[in-house]
Image (cartoon, rainbow, N blue to C red; front, side):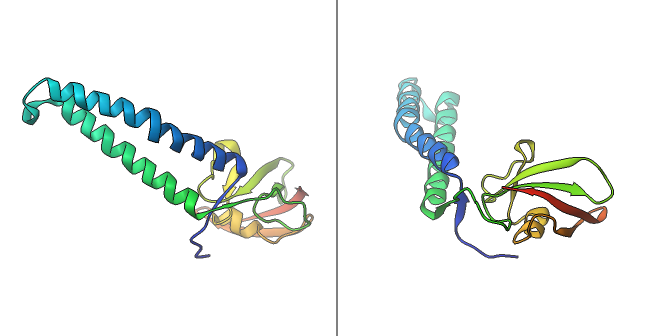
Length: 156
């Protein structure tokens, strides 16, 4: 398996994370501070459910902020690929050998992988089997049901 400390992101995902980070640091932190202030005004903090809930929300928010900051610090923007071999940013159309149906996927970094959106990680079994292949090339990869054989019928 490829060991890489970089987080590969599309420009859209990078912008989305940047916007989320800004919202968390400004709007959300202020909302939580107001909740904490209100909860403190209720008195005894040892049995104050509102205070405990606000503290948990604050911890979760700060954790998410750290997580996004780490992702953005390691981020490498994926350029939409215009080559003749599959790489990060490629849109690949594949067809299972012996079948007519076709599936199209975008090869993305693991932080963006989402099968419902047809975005596969370059580190997944399918993604890593696709990397470096060309249109017309056949390939196989292992699944729990055994080896699956496909052919690349489109690449952009």
